[in-house]
Amino acid sequence: MINISNAAGNISAAFNLTELRDNNLHQSSGTINYSPDNALTVHVLTPLNQWMIFKGDTLSIFYPVENKLIKMPSRSGEVTLPIFKLLINTNLEGLGLVKAGYTLFETQVENNKITAVWKPPKAAERILGDLIATYVNDSLMSIVAFDPKDKIVSRQIFSEYIANNGGFFPTKLEVAKYNKTDSVFEALNLEDVAFGAEIPEESLNPVIPDNAETTTIEW
Image 1 (spheres, rainbow, N blue to C red):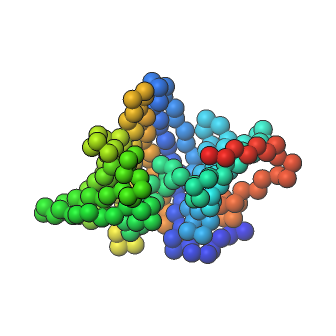
Image 2: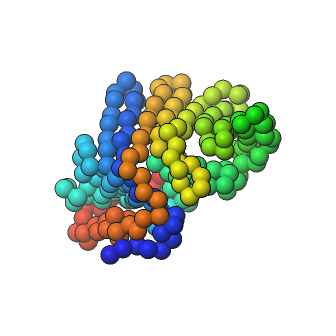
């Protein structure tokens, strides 16, 4: 079966992800498929066979070999965007910040560089600080997040852009998350990126057997 709904917004690619956490290096690779109607599906091929399905308010993780399914509904509604969808959000107006309650405070223009300062929702000012997004030639270069005391808590760097429908799309994202106990560093690279392609139904909605051992964890 082929999913042709909203095909113009579909994105498919192969990925390589590297993560450094607690001085341990983790690497994985596989494919991703995104459809505006069917959310995001990540098929990890190495180091193990795993499906991660982000749809609505639930993340489903399926292990075909073990026939195990973990369902993780989110109390806050839409599931938290993973590093994969951060790249996709670069094409969205306001990076989804307006929907999250952020307010554009000011923009600074210097030659071909634009710096946008976003203020957090009033209700979250005790735990969240500003976000600063930097664009060069209308392409997103970085997003830096601060805490209420103006200390950097995360940094996202976008690069290696390719043409897409009159604009440009990043195929590399580096993320650093800083905290008191440990810091996490991630690097995501996309290859063989296809825009507007018809995505097979089994790639967006993989078949999960009815007899799969299922565990539900709310987060």
